[in-house]
Image (cartoon, one colour):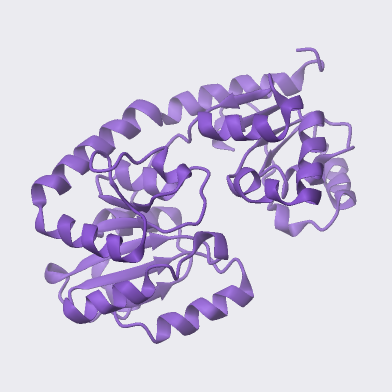
Length: 324
């Protein structure tokens, strides 16, 4: 929204989950006098925009290409959405290739633009207050907080590391895993809460304002990603930008941005995660190298300004005729 408003557009930002049918979108378009639309996630957002006679573009989310494309009915719906869309944006070349393989009719309208990153930690954030809120009653000087940032839903697999980490915490009481994020799936959230309550050294906190979350990232020892699939993890990129080490599950979306032992560490199972986390704790030189390389990678390939320029140019495709 900031990118588009900077180009003089007026933007109405809505959550796709707030709408149950395209007719509700039709009412919104009429009420706000919308002239164009941009949908995040080909299925969740895109399907709501069909047939409204306003031009629209799509930004792939990750689960649409990685997960939803494997479900026949959703795949068909998404193919129709792409036929109507003026353009689509993939975060990586591999995501673009996957989308083109699924929907060959979209060739020629899929662009690649990596997520741009601009972090803004809250300078007034109090780390000790955060630790008390997280029920971690130890001196901050001796703590090593591993932060897992994710919405509580199955594709993010927040419980993947809980058992292994809990065992490690019992050996080394200074290490904690803190899971931070919104409660997206109510049923799964109850399962996560029940598991975390029984797990030593694992804490669960809710959604936080972005500036506060960036401050938490800046103060933690490492950021963790344990997702089953990812499009492009903003949390990973933000950690790199804030000069914090990253440990990520070895899946295509993560491996596209994390080069093992260069910009972060990739693990394939919980035991390997613990092994790599211990190695990172005991090897300051490795930590420093990963941090320096990660920051440089973000500066080179995830420019916030380049992202702004790209979306401002793409939106022009929605302003002219279909042939533009």
